Amino acid sequence: MRVVLIAIFLANYLFAVVTVVPKIITLDDVPSDMVNKAGAIYASLSNGEIVSIDANRRVKKLLILPKAQNYNGEKVNQRALSVALSSSAKLIAVASDSGGIYIFNGKNIIKTAFNTKTVIRKIAFVSEDTILVALLSSEIVKFDLKTNKIVSVVSTGTSALSDMAISPDLKIAYSAGEAGIVTLINTETMQITSRFQGGNVDNIYRLDSQNFLTITAGQDRRSVLYGKNGTILKRWDGSFLIYAAALSPNGSRAAIAMDEQNNITVVNTIDGSVKYIAKGHTTSLNRIVFLSEDTFASCADENKIYIWRIK
Image: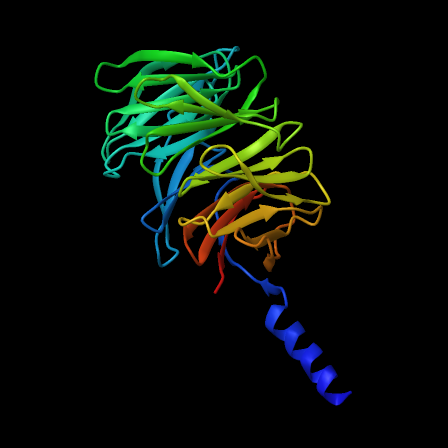
């Protein structure tokens, strides 16, 4: 009997879910978006600021969007909706809530000719001088920064678009929205190459793609892991709306916001097992980004970024 009890204890110890506590970075306003570049975080804030957080977790204010004129003729702050970095990290692109896109070259903030009356959901570089702009209207726009012109536009469907992710090699854009379908677009030709479906049956809030794997965060309380060809490899069911999910660089781990307590569940994508619970957020998650295989960052509807270390 004693041997059995010891075996049960060891099994529980070895396979127990570990609770993780974060390092909290306090900012001037609520983060709307964030990206990782070489372990550093670049975040856009609702007050129009772009900040960086280095490996030592020091915050640096890089720029603030110029004020824009509202319908009453008043100069007001623009919200920064999304941020992107070029491969060289020499250029930062920022999308504003007024429908414009700005480029920061380290010295000057330059307003591009891009303008839209719909909401910009996400922006991303696909080359040093080309960006993709994902719009709420379900369109993906390719914009050339050198010519300051739109190159092409592709419609991903008739449903509202929520998010876009770019493959690490910059060759594929993944978009998703209310239809619960992931649409794949060749970033060179701007042709739709495939659609992943069957995993989600409602709006996909967020998605991420790493190492030929794609993960979704759904309103239907599902987080779905797709393989390279759209095969459903895993599905995790949450107890609440799943607002955010992300994959580690090699795809072996996923971080998913799966409950009403705003906890983040870290799972093994190979066997589906739960490994860690990251506790600390008090409001709904907005985005999760892995900085390395054992570190990820998260932001919610609060003026903080949480950084989590897992083993």
